[in-house]
Length: 206
Image (cartoon, rainbow, N blue to C red):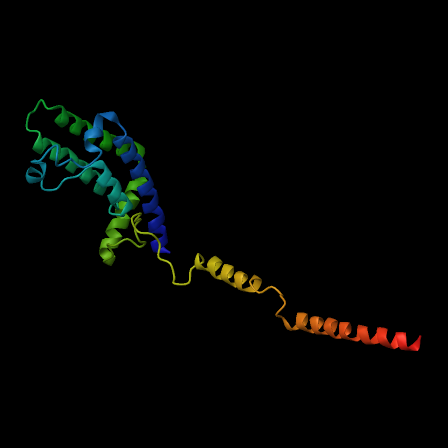
């Protein structure tokens, strides 16, 4: 019951964090941080930034259930901002300014829209799980890259088997080779063989 209550709370947290991240990612001011940096356009980025982060990766982290609190989420928002400040050294850089706006917007949204009691409950869940030694998610995280496994005898195979059975049932119509038709044919031939003898007997009697 404790695990179920915790998962219910963390599910609400994930829904909230997805909504916040979606609003940030669709904001035109922050489009530079919506996806990973293209190494072809910025070839030296990987050598200068050791831990890249972007909003699409944040969404993946949410789906992977890596955030137990809003504070965990905001750490990755801080990382996006710090990477931009580290890479764009020019204080007048537009990207530095937008990174700071992104950070402030994320903090303001979380602090204003998340209930204080709910945030405290998430902190208690994280602390409780650390004490219990359980850090992995109770349920398997979402993974759209893998299709659900199927048993060897799946329902998809059943229609094919049934169709084969139907074909076997309908593929044997009654023809001239069946015992019933042979019996009828023999009876007709026997009847025809008696007709000439009947006419002969009648002519003799006359």
